[in-house]
Each structure stands twice: as C-alpha cells, then as structure tokens.
Image (cartoon, rainbow, N blue to C red; front, top):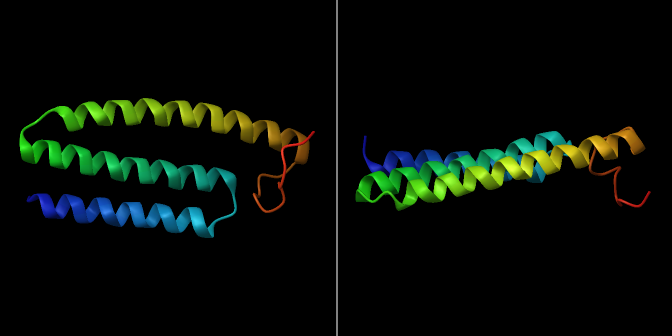
Length: 99
C-alpha cells in the first residue's frame, strides 16, 4: 500500500476524534477520542517513517505512547475523583473543580 492510503486513514481517524471531542459530553468518551487522535498521529508518524526509511518517526511514536499512558492514568484518576464528589462525569454539569 502506498503512503497516501495510510495518511488518508490517519486523517480520517483524527477527524473522527476531533468530532467526538467537540460533540460528546461524557468525559470518558472525550478521553477515548483524544486517544484516537493520538493514535492517528502515531499512524502518520509510522507511515512516513517507513516511507522514508528513517526510524525517527517510530521513536516519536514511542514518546507519544508514553505521554498517552500518563494522560490516561492521570485523566482517569481525575474522573474517578470528580465522580465521587459530583456523581456525574458529564462535562456540562462539572463546571469547576472546587470542592
């Protein structure tokens, strides 16, 4: 397969993620859409890296995956804390993080 197909798929996945972040109001779904956008960027990095024959893109993917893992751990901890205090994870109803 050529590079264009991978980049089109990456752009499509990124667009789906952006639409999900803008439309959905559930915090867990928003985090899943952010992960989808990060994976779309990873796909583009790997495809371009493979096309150029340079492993630097795969190194970037490793760092993006590390950041994504940290984001998930911290984000889910915040969601659990907010749910304990507010009993909702709807971002429209949670407008501040004050106790």
